Length: 173
Image (cartoon, rainbow, N blue to C red; front, side, top):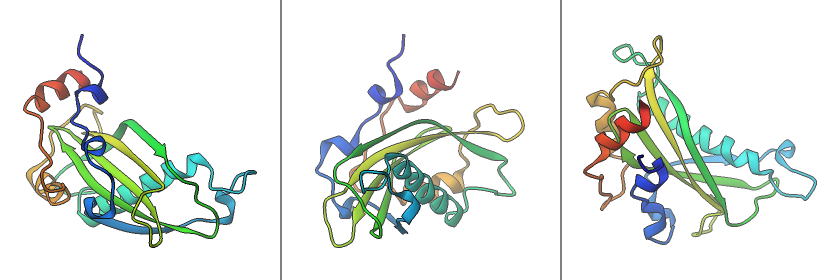
């Protein structure tokens, strides 16, 4: 039986200390009053919303979504968030994103959330999309323009595993 996705993946996030310099795309996201919980900090579920916001914004800006030449949509098949420090209203976070892995039909986004003027993240995590045909819902390969755009968001020294396609085929069957 194949290993779970997270055990097969090369985890760049765990091999080096996190810092702002390791992220390639940025979006500032303000917290809202309604994001708070009874304990006075932003509720955990909001962090996932921030992950989704930075990913979706980047995908639109890099012309990945709603392309006329690629009828694909992304399904989240795995996500994870590690909390390091609380965020409170009215703080904003700088959401940093990099591409951790480019597969045949998948992208792994790695996200760091940073408070203003802080070098260490208040949260880190990842989000994996498998891209599928919008009608059949079957995995489809990333097209070259998408692949090229995403390569620019990979940090220097990020190594793609040799068995990426084989592992991915097993995962999406």
